Image (cartoon, rainbow, N blue to C red; front, side):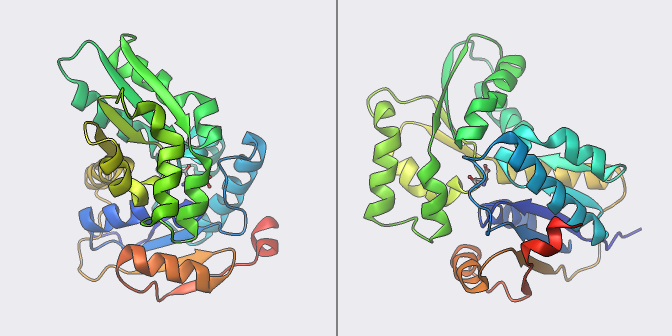
Length: 275
Ligand code: DGL
């Protein structure tokens, strides 16, 4: 049996494309619908109430596209809105990005009782304490977790600035406290940040830098296989929606995905706010 229904995934903007890229590598035959809420990005500085409201609207929109699974390709939404999304999704499986990354870091920590883990995330994700609490539950209280909120990273990435001196200055601004005393592993707890991964790795060469896309993709692939929901036929497709200017989204998407985001539509906020 082959299930051709699409997989829906969403983020505040282009950050979730880092998840889409990893998913497409793991599950190339699937049909994907990507939703970037570019009109309301960034989410990371907003209240839990606002983020949950946006996530509800996007969830309803994607459920109407007959998705077979929902992927919350955003740590901020994963940190604050999962209960509501799962309630709306009913029988449709929902995957978030925090647990797979915590699983990855616990594999990295195997056999070590003491280690320092750094978490880079948005203000809302940091405030939720989801990462330190999940790491303590999974790997033990003796693992030291230090979080740094890096709100400017999201705006830089949305503007396609992830290579130059401005991006380097932002990395230095947030991470200088770890330059001399580097954690053993650094988790990119925001799906926008993998675009800055080469700069972060160059700045903290002693740290192992982990991101959620590959870990999440393995979890999704296993879950779909277990439920006999994989699309086995070849020729997976991608449809993109964003809530603000198409040209900005398409330019940033193409330079990241390495191919044009051709099937792209702008959805007006008023059309999803009333769903
Ligand atoms: N990429 C998202 C995350 O993983 C959202 C960032 C933002 O919009 O502030 O948290």
